[in-house]
Image (cartoon, helix red, strand yellow):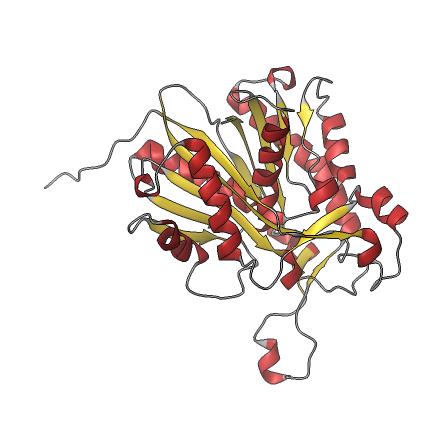
Length: 333
């Protein structure tokens, strides 16, 4: 019997560069409140959000992801032709097929890299990071481009008081490559489908076929139950990711959770007993909740502002619809 051959990759993977794109239009709480019964004070107290970016007609998933990717490649010093795979984390790409990743891979000039999308809601980016690390270590790819890109405004009802103020649009990207030393820790991930209804589209798209006069489907969520789940359960998952990497909260330079809500972020930091010197990402204040794009956007913000050092250790955790989650530790590019 013949023996199958297998590929052998790098001992470890690492982040080489990061890039971000925020739409040009900045939307204040006052503007959001023109269509919902709320106020700037109520929104800030409840979520910490002051402004968010909303994409215009030309700021598509592909265009935003492409710009973020170009910046990440420039930061990494890696050429498009060196990219072997492009993974886009998104659930707001309204074109069912083709994947946004294939278009970005072509437009950026990879010359035929493998490309596909990942749909895991707000945890999509951390899921995609795990896939990229596995490709590099298995030898399937040497360099992987991971992008989180979302147009949340396409799925949010602007008149829904529970969701209209929360979400924003944008894209963030990282370039991953081989490393001689450990630079990405183990991934702790999972899901709880029994609570899938807590964050979900109001109706499937095919419901429109039988009822063309029906209001188009929008994203709905049970904010209170999601808040409790995120605060109490995700702090435990974050600690498990630290334990898996052999780290303690005191070893961290930065904590970069999904930018869901300032109250959730602060509650998680307290539950984990993070030291005062750990930079906690709070990009949600000016960017809103951008789902799968929020972690790379927040990472870029921490690095460009100097609040977190290149080469520092960061804990990343994404969580949301599914309910799904994924957490890992990384050395910052």
